Length: 69
Image (cartoon, rainbow, N blue to C red; front, side, top):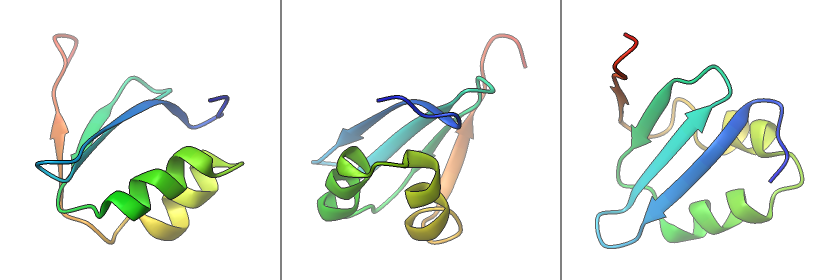
């Protein structure tokens, strides 16, 4: 999954949680994300563009702190 913005992501279907780690190292968990949105992110040719259009500012999220924060 080459992306200049998103380093990795993981979707947990039972909890509908989409965890995204950005290239900056920051990790966010987006809540109540439909599986269709997560699947579309996986297929999107530009993960960053899809994130900005379909996920950012549309779902509740929490930032997970790392040991560096």
